[in-house]
Image (cartoon, rainbow, N blue to C red; front, side, top):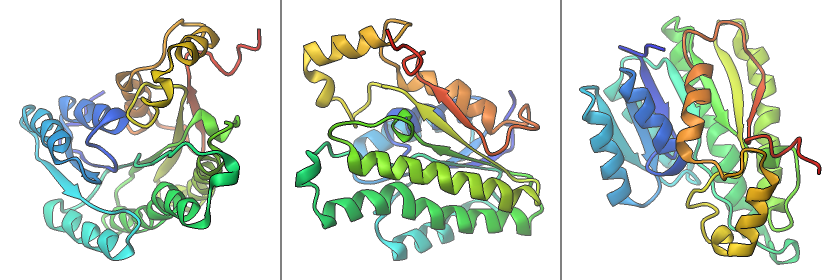
Amino acid sequence: MDFKNKNAIVTGGSRGIGSAIAIALAEKGSNVIFTYAHNDDEAGKTLDKIRSNGVDGHSYRINQENMEEINKFIEFVKLKFNTVDILINNAGICPFRNYFDIDKPLFEKVWKINVESHFFITQEISKIMIENNIKGKILFISSISAIVGGEFQAHYTTTKSGINGMMHSLAIILGKYGIMVNSLEPGTILTDINRDDLSDDKKRKYMESRIPLGRLGKPEDMAGPALFLVSDENTYVNGSELLADGGMLVNLQ
């Protein structure tokens, strides 16, 4: 897969899955802008790895709950890139909570970051693609949690199901412009979002036992599937959900 001279946007790209995908895109020749929320050190490390490939790389610190900051980010994209070929909506949070302890402010925070921000970022980036006649690729990083539940994830699973619903509609709306939209559904991937939850050795071993491959996923495991879906090699996969969970979902024994 060759991404030379492509321009890609990755939200939530300083760590975890977003960072792995952003770096992989750069290694294949793509210019990359990624957003991040607060960790300047991690963002700097990812940016250095991106730029080490001789591509045009930029990081952008943003609070994706804030519509004004989203608008400023879109202006930054227009300033740095004359157009956009790839958008990967990855930013997300999952503050594990008992269902009865989830209040409205927390629910709204998770919804705004995981769904609402990507609705409007995608709206603006797709306009840029259409105005420049770019047959672009848009990918939402959803989750296995869009399919199955979690005891402490009622707010999170709601957002991931919402992302897939949005993706289905956008595949129809943007398909007429040659823009393809899909989602990737990672299984249990060891990232900062669940590091504390999986620090319980008993729970971690149980989760590993549910996965036929016998291990938790790594962020780098998501780079290959993601890159295929946003590459020129993908000529007909549109409106699809690709589950990447090591076989966990089908393992009922």
